[in-house]
Image (cartoon, rainbow, N blue to C red):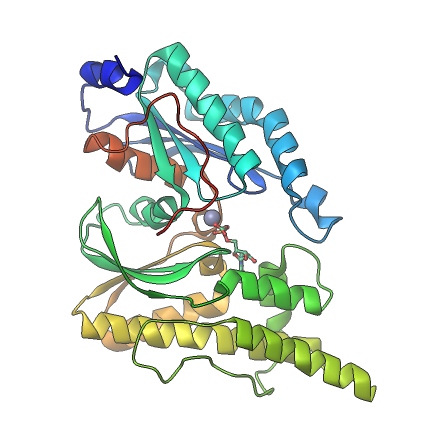
Length: 349
Ligand code: KG4
Ligand code: ZN
C-alpha cells in the first residue's frame, strides 16, 4: 500500500490541526508550527544572507550545505517555541518547488524522514501557493474569492483566487520578475546582496526625476515586462560613466522603484475593476517594499477595496505560509504526498 493511502486512512480531519511547515527553497532555512491554518505558534527563519553576501548572490551548493547543517536545529527551535513535541504534530508540509534543487531536497528529505518516523501525512507545497496563503495568516477572516498580486524574486503575476484550492492566471511577466529586476539594478549600483531591500532604503533619499520606461503600462492586459526597465537603468549608468558625469544613485533607485511599482498598482486596479473583485491581497518578497505597500493602500482606499498586506516577515520566505497552505491541502485531502516526493526546480503557477 502506498504511504499516503496508509496515513490517509488514519487522518481525523481536525479543524485545529497542528501543521509543521518546512521551507528551504533558496537561502533561508525555515520551520514553523501553525494551528488551524491561521494561528502561528512559532516561525523560525535562519538566514544565510551573510554567507552569500560575499559572492554577490546565492551560491546554490553553499545554500544546500547550510540547509543541511541547520534544518534539524531550526525545526527543533520551532517546536520548542510553539511549546509542542513532534508527537503533537498532525502533518508536515514542505516546499517541494519551485526553487534551487539541492536546497529544496534538504527540506523535502527531512520532512519525508520525520513523516515516516511519526507515521503522519506529508503534504507537498508549491512555494508560490505558500506565498499566497501568507494572507490567511494576516487576515484570519479572509476567504476567497479575491485577487492576488504575486511579486517575488521569480514571479510576477495577477491571479484570481476563486476558492481555497484553485486559482486562475490573469497575466504575468513576459521576461524578468519584478524582484529579479530590483536585484539586478542593485548590482548595477554596487549595492550588497540582497538587492531589493537596499534599493528600497536608498530610494527613501531620492527623487523620481530620471525618465525610465514603464513597460506595457498602457496595454489593457495583465502582462508585465521588466527586462527593458532593467536595461534602461544599466544604460543610464554606463552613459554617465562614459561621459565621466556624476549621478545620484538615490534618484536612480527612486526612479526605478516608481517605474517598477506603478505598473503593478495600475494593473491591479484594472484587474479588480474588470473582474468585479473588492478584495486584493499581496504576496512575495517585493510585498515588503514600503513604496509598493503605500501605493497599493492608496489605490485600495480610493476605490474602497479591501487590501490585505502580510507583515513584511510573511512577505519574504518563511515556513508559516507553507504550513498555512499545507493546512488547506490537508483539510481538503489534497496534495498528500508519497515518500517518493522529489524536489522540482520549476513549477508552473
Ligand atoms: O518571495 P521572496 O522572498 O523569494 C522568492 O520566492 O523569490 O522574494 C525575494 C525577492 C528578491 O528579489 C528581493 O530583492 C525582493 O524580493 N525584495 C524586495 C524587498 N524585500 C525583498 N524588493 C523590493 N523591496 C523590498 N523591500
Ligand atoms: Zn519566496
